[in-house]
Each structure stands twice: as structure tokens, then as C-alpha cells.
Length: 125
Ligand SMILES: [Zn+2]
Image 1: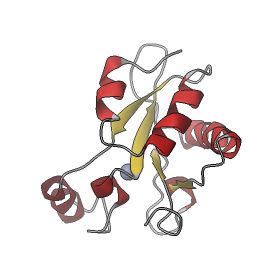
Image 2: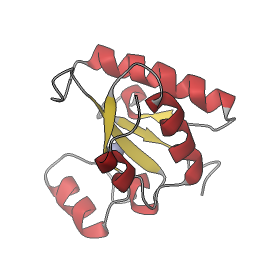
Image 3: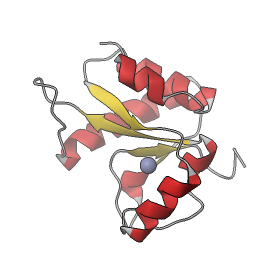
Image 4: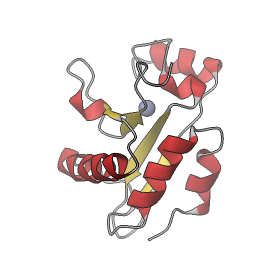
């Protein structure tokens, strides 16, 4: 598989370390697309208001986060959390090859976010 044009467009402005990891995983058999990369402060405010994000300090604002949506064979979104565990597994494997540290929203306790992957503040201030 390869990233579709929409995904490539949405990776604009995203940190090259994160892009490299996403590109490696995209070559595998799990089909996904990038639903969001860089985010404007306006959109972030809307998401917080809607309860879909808990922080005004999102890594999306600085290009340090991406949201990846797993796709069914017909191209529709697959929201089964098990699929995101599979995706995260591949992301972490690719990240370790590239020696990139990645945090997964699926590990968050308060608002579990399966599609969300980010570079940590500690290594990427
Ligand atoms: Zn996100």
C-alpha cells in the first residue's frame, strides 16, 4: 500500500520524523489514511469546546501529532479499537527502527484516542 493523496496533503507541516514513521507503516498491509496533521488554533478551540480534545496545548498545533484512521476494504473508516492496537504495534516497530520516540493516544487513561500518535514533549519541545 501507499499513502493516498489526501494523506500526503495532510502530512504537510508535520515533523519529518513522524512522517518517516507513517510512511514506513503505510507500506505494510494495514490500510489507513491520515485524517489530521497540522491543526489551526481556531480548530483546536472548537475541538476543546466540543469535548473532543482536552488541551489547548495539542501537539497538532506544532506539527508533532497525526491522527490515523484505519480503513475497511471498501474505504470506510474502521473504529474497532483492536485495529488501532494493531496499527500502534506497527507504528512502534517502525519508530524503533528509525529511533524515533512516539506516544500513542490509545494509552491515555482519561480520553483514549486510538487514531492519535505524537512525538513526546520531552524529546521534541
Ligand atoms: Zn490527534
